[in-house]
Amino acid sequence: MRKYVIRRLLMMVPLIFGISILTFAILKLSPGDPATLSVALNSKIDPGYITKLRASFGLDQPVYIQYWRWLKGMLTLDFGNSFMDNRPVLTVIGERLPATFLLSGLSELLLFLVAVPLGILAAYYQGRWLDRFTSIFSFVGFAMPTFWLALMLMLIFGVQLGWLPVSGMTNVGTEYLPWYDRLGDVLQHLILPLVVTTYGGLASVSRYARTSMLEVIRQDYIRTARAKGLSEFQVIFRHALPNALIPIITLLGLSLPALIGGSFIIESIFAWPGMGRLGFEAIMSRNYTVVMGIGIISAFLTLMGNFLADIGYALADPRVRYD
Amino acid sequence: MIKRLWKRHPLIFWGGALVSVLVVMALICQWVAPYDPDNQVLADRLLPPSWHHWMGTDQYGRDILSRMLYGSRISLAVGLVAVSIYVLIGTTVGSVAGYYGGWVDGLLMRVTDIFLCIPTFLLILMVIAFVGPSIVNIMVVIGLTSWTDVARLVRGEVLALKEREFIQAARVIGMKDSRIILRHLLPNALGPVLVVATLGIGGAILVESALSYLGLGVQPPTPSWGNMLEEGKEHLTDAWWLITFPGLAIFLTVLGYNLLGEGLRDLLDPRLRGSGRNG
Image (cartoon, rainbow over all chains, first blue to last red; front, side, top):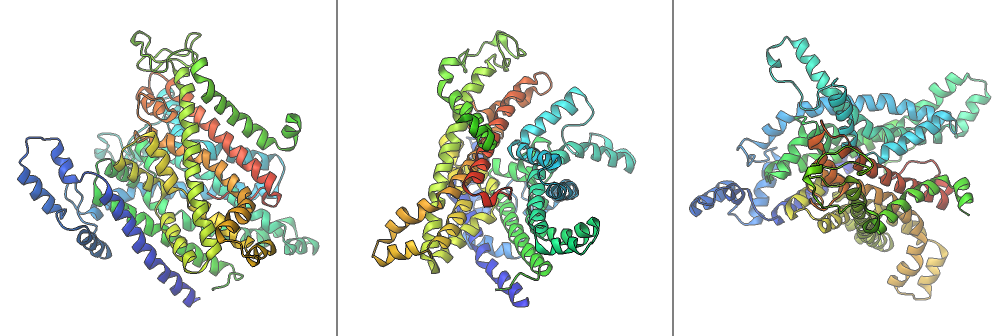
């Protein structure tokens, strides 16, 4: 097991290296840099100032030196400074993290609480109306553009009914209210983005749980359990469910990047001040360092998520061989 | 025959029906569209649906129905071209990696892993933001970034197939590698690729509409369902029809391709019936 863990960790090193090169290359190959961009608005600017500005960003160095500097910084979690306001990228990201974490953490929780039981039940009642309903529901879920769902919910609950706020995380002026009023305010703002984020994952998670449960209840040991006269409750909860839930570990691992990275579209639509919106804004304003920071962090989280999922799976399922 | 299809393969029937509607719309829109999709009639701005404008008009007085009909062309074109590009790349990478194995396989799969680690939508956004938005760029960028699933799928199929007797026989009689791959391996791996490609068209249409919605896709005044939503969201409070119809069209189109893809999966490989989908 230890050897397996070490091998998996070592395999990640060249991947991280490759990801950093790819991310860096895309940004370097793209036209325009923040120095020229920031002066494009002002044509009367002194050309000497542009040179100075480029030098201050380190943009006058050869590409490989720029890359090397960036890579060295990255290893010490120094992603450079944001081109927008010259604050460290990590600080900028840190400010946005809580909002995303609140939204996607709750959504993840809700997702697994709703989708997993739904999928398990659908598998248990395979072919019956619940299964059919889940199946239709998942087709609808896969085809629904989340941003359209968001707009329609905003239209219905925000505009027509006027029940819920449609953008931001807080109302203006709430900072002077007592904490429970502020909490209520945030919760109200949370409802619509939460519903949309959760809905986006419902279809795939419930389907995944269904498949997993279907595979388990076809096994011989389930038939054995029934044959020796165990109650249906025992068969399902003691024998089938623990094994059917093992693959869910993989899903939990794979959801790690979304937990931290958030969603570009949903956060942008609801003006939710999280990582997704930060990433989108950074891309639109060519804020290289922030984009690269977010890219690298997302990729690293994906790697970590896969790694944790594999380890968790290996721990939970003794049939997995470590080779 | 249609009746039999409906009874035995309802997924293919309904999916095929939805996709056919899209194709017909795209083909005949220039004859059936009641108005010029770009014609601005400022006196008629933001009219609700009526007999004259079945889906109402937008903030420039353009007819929504006509714009919807023309928008189908974008969705269809982006879906087909983007998926063709990535199926081509994925099939090449996957079959070469699977057939030759060894360090070629190792290298190609590591590259695939790298692409898999960076969230595809982030990658697409980054590239589009830098090369500039246009229909062609969207197709190419989706194509260049989304090939990983196909590559892994084809590699798996080729790995399983290449140990079979008919491939060994082909090798023994001295057939060239390229011929073995093209004539013997790929045709046998075609089924699963077709399924993934069909589902992928739905996915590509979703990505295009999301990009257009963010203003990084098809640029106005060319109508695309995504940029119609983008323009419509400014009038969320006073014109519900602007965002309702284009979104519904995207939903039904993607649903059509997904139903068709799942139906094909059932048809081609009954073993996989009811199992989860890749990607």
